[in-house]
Image (cartoon, rainbow, N blue to C red; front, top):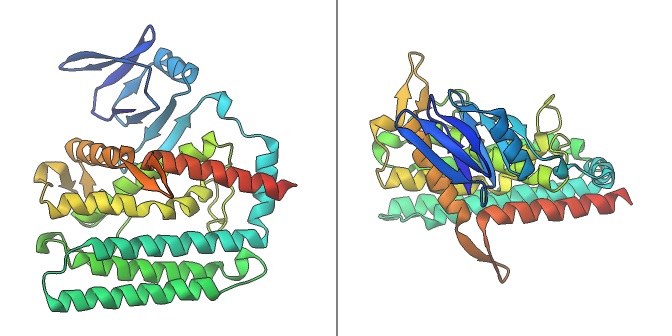
Amino acid sequence: MELIINSFGTSLNRDNEGFVISTSEGRQRVPAEGITSIQISKGAQITSDAVMLAVEREIEVVFMDRSGNVIGRIWSPKYGSVSTIRKGQLNFSLSHNAIDWIKDVIRRKIENQQALILAMTAHDEPTANRVQTAIRRLEDYRTKIAAIDGEVISDISSTLRGWEGLASKIYFEALNMFLPEHYRFEKRSQHPALDVPNAFLNYGYGVLYGKVEGALIKAGIDPYIGVLHRDDYNRPVLVYDVIELYRVWVDYVVYTLLLQNAVTDEYYSVQSDGSYWLEPLGRRVLIQSLNDYLEESVEVKGNVRSRQHQIFLYAQNLAQQFKKAEL
């Protein structure tokens, strides 16, 4: 379970082996047992006693900005990486294995995009035809990515980024056809969001970034040693690589909310510069919807596990690949 403290003026304190959430409306005690992470947003407070309880119980504490991005993290020292994993990770990132790995990541990302497009219902023949065209174009990029090669990742990184970007453009154009008219947007806008869907997508991705980074850290992996994303100074660039496998989960949750017309004017605000920001109610609904989706158990290769746990297992398997590269 995740404890989310994102309302202005809310504070989190310790009460023996539990936490106490204090708001203007009263106090609520929550046992520490069963909590996996605590998310703190701007305007909320956490005491040192509460932080110490979290560290003792191996509960990560994540500080998030208004966009849902992680700006700081406190975790148990038991998560510390062993040297063999980090040495292997560096060797892996400079080897041909890194090329095969990132190509697989991007191809799986595009496959997930195709699946979500096909999950939408086309109510007329023109829309159905446009869907099939988008699917074929995305498949063309999967084929190109499978065929490209080089000695090291830098030989093909710019090409891969270009193809990935073009595939995402096709993907969002196709999904746009299914949105209510007033939610359709011209293009993806990140900093800042220029419409409601992008505001939700950006915040959702920010939350997912935090979950992926946490899984990598717990597995002993250094999130700052990336493969495709390698040039961003002081950024957890490996998170940017791994998250591509799971972005579609955020897309599904956001588009479901929009298609159900579940979003009201109270969920967001429009700033003087035309940018869109999620308000506390919108953040709360999105976080709850996303967490419910991630906690849902699904069958993968004969095993039934939650989507959240799948991220952790992937990080563990990746750590084992890195350890082999150190030998």
